[in-house]
Length: 469
Ligand SMILES: [Fe+2]
Image (cartoon, rainbow, N blue to C red):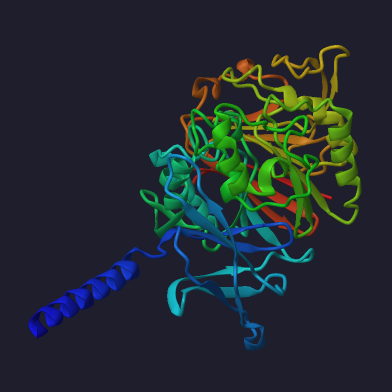
């Protein structure tokens, strides 16, 4: 009898130890390493974990010891069909001094599991650099090479002009073609680079991110609203708002998505932010949005005029208003906003969608009456443009009009390289066209001087121009 009790106790002890070991192994694991986001009011660090309770915290170290602190994150649970439930943690970096070097350490309980450092966003007086590219998360060798060139450029932030991951903006695609490449542990043209952990990323949503919104077909779709933390100051305030990416497909999958997305959906489709001495507006250019809608146009106008102190004004969205490439030639409906951008003194509009690089002459555009894009009409918008052909970005650096850049060569297959050497195939507004290789746009801002370089995936400069105020 005594022996039986001893054996039973021993078995129980083994089971308890095994259960504890299992919990040690199986409990909260890091699924996605920390990445930097803008959030609504400053820099945030996000990371993803398995769906286990754990005390996560972020230990922050500033340049001054008294600024060290521990931040406990907010958490959203993502429990959508086809994907194991997981958690998205989001921690604010507190009390940032512009341009300050900040270190952070991610703690699971008391254990340090990850550390990195970054620079706090620059002040209005400091010079800074940003990189722009789009159409990137395709899992190609060129995506890796562009990521590596971006890393070499050491930008203060990266702006993605949409089509962040192919081909349907799904959680599964972020895990394969976004996080591992832009947050790789090593920097290499064949691997990617450790960018996201130390460099702020901001993005506009493209058609491959949020146009496909049939949650029956892709229950893990619309991951843009789950994984990005961008300002919630745009015009779409409620679910079902006109001009928003309304949900489609199996209704049973809507609630899990809405619960996981929280306030991000649909408001994060459009927003504005300030960085350094510039003001940015980021727009959803997908075809369900009617940008002739007076209330939307008024939102842009008001936003641009309310930032009088900004030296530079930039706009970013996916579908270019001005492109010469034959692919997607009829997708140029965003030119209906040209007059709003001109009145708001916008300097450069960054777009993607077309997988190459194009620079317009500084231009002003007037839509022909009656040819404005209607919400159900995906056709071209005809009109007349006035070009500043005297601007060369070297001797003459004060443009008359807005410069429109297409920079959609971040990784997905290039479009119409055969047009590069045939300027007669370009529209009159196109000043430069580069489609031979993938490339990125590097912008250096120093007070009232702005220098733009287009850099190929192998590190060669393929265009350069300067703007001054
Ligand atoms: Fe696109």
